[in-house]
Amino acid sequence: IAIVPLTALGILSWRRTQVKHSMTAAAGLAGKRLPSFELCSPAHGGCAPVESYTAGHPAVLIFTRPGCPFCDAQIRELREIAPDGVRLLPVVVATRDVARHVAEQYRPLMSLWDGQDAFRTTLVGTAVPLTIVVDHDGMVRHASIGQQSRAVLGNALRTALAGVMSDR
Image 1: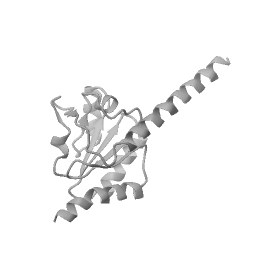
Image 2: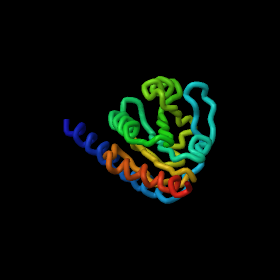
Image 3: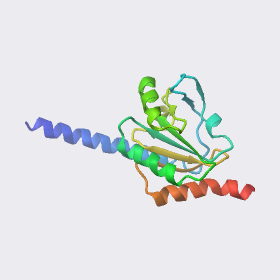
Image 4: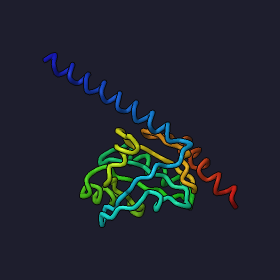
């Protein structure tokens, strides 16, 4: 009987360590160019460099898992506050079949699938939602783990758009 609580405590401790590691990795992205990795279409499976989805436009990549209520809430919030011209790109971290199903709930947004495992290998992610805001030049202006407030997301979007506005 005592084994179950000790096992649960061990799992919780391990999970906290994983989330802390992800938060540190996410914070290390800000102010740098978005690393190069490929994302795939859940519909046809074809993969392309992330830059093909973000080049020349401010964009928000939201790495999500099926059934994650915090991910869904983050995407809803971003849909409400993102100005025109910002690409919202949900990226499903799951199998292709699951990603295809999840993509339906995010329509009309173009959902992508992490078919190359960039979330874990390139971005060192273990917790979702992982939200990455990039400006039109591909510089990461905000990266965070977990659901963020409207104020934090709004500030990240304004920062990403600042370069676009100053170019006009």
